[in-house]
Image (cartoon, rainbow, N blue to C red; front, side, top):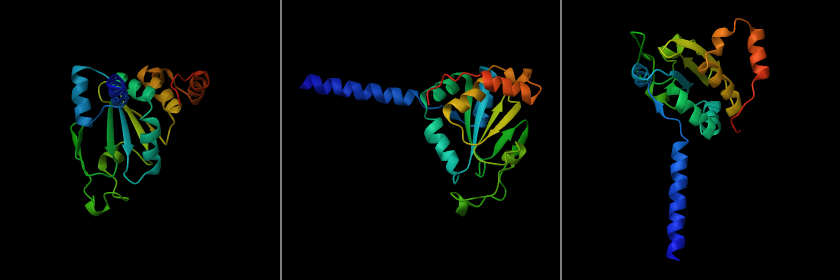
Length: 183
């Protein structure tokens, strides 16, 4: 009986460690930019709002996917940014705020943060990619399933986007892309 309990506890402990290992390691933008100085990696930023249903679906269905989490953790610094929050952000020697933020609307529609406007984010969720020096690459708007996000994660991580000069070239990449992430 004691042996079964011990084995059961070991199994529960092992499963809990696996679950922890499958989460994305989120940091602030400032932390990601600092980390880039020591170990250059691209930055993957989830721009969300508290009231956004597709943002919550992205958190639950895509960011909890073990393949997505492992890939993002290995190849990117991951940043979560509330596009209507009150956080002060410093980027490229500029400080961005949300001067019209209303704390009473923290979980409802609020004013747009200056940084989300700077990034030209117009819908939520939007995932923004930055290069190894913190330079803006591109925003990708909308809810994406793991395999849909995989296409962009690998496109930007490999720098294949730099070779593309037309929509046709992207369409060819899209058609020839074989996803490896499990849905």
